[in-house]
Image (tube, rainbow, N blue to C red):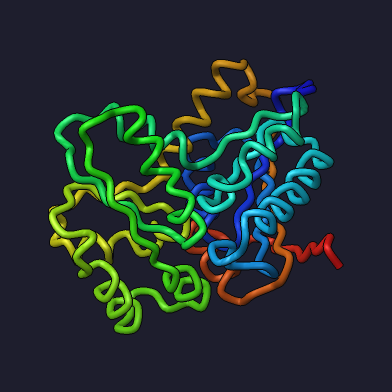
Length: 270
């Protein structure tokens, strides 16, 4: 059971992508303590089976429970699509579990003046058809097309951003016929906000590119307030763990948090 409002918020992803969510949470909720886990030893999650992604997600959730987290944010679309229900069952009443898909669905169906929605993400997220199913169930009449962009995550994790290589890959994917005539594009992977400006530029800023990180942070704030779990007692602390150290993780974390962070390696599979 959740006992204290000053318990930390746990956030996990396969790598650096979840830092976009963690950063948005830190900006919106500066009093909250955060524990971040990037499973860099097993990235990307997008090309792995549902069973494998669920196994990794459950093990990480167990660790975050041991760290006494009051809320666990699955800051990975692939894990959200494939492991959310299993993690909720595992966690029970010991913590609240939030995924990064449902807040975006809520945001989309409340919008007006949209009709043609594109979704890009990993193979795991796109093959689950989660966005398409949930959007059309909630709001009929919307056209939703999905396309896997599997090179984006390794491209970002290897540091190929804001350069000719990343621009060429982005152009190759987004120029495909599936995404023709869309007015809204959902970034169905928390890595993708890192290249949001490049994606928007490809569309000459005429397509509304939906970044889940801010939407999830607002959703989390509402959950905290609704359950009277917002921290107003102790100074916040921040802990960052990875299952395998990478130089780029350190670099990108400084980009989002505007300060050097202490990065600790923690691999509870070995």
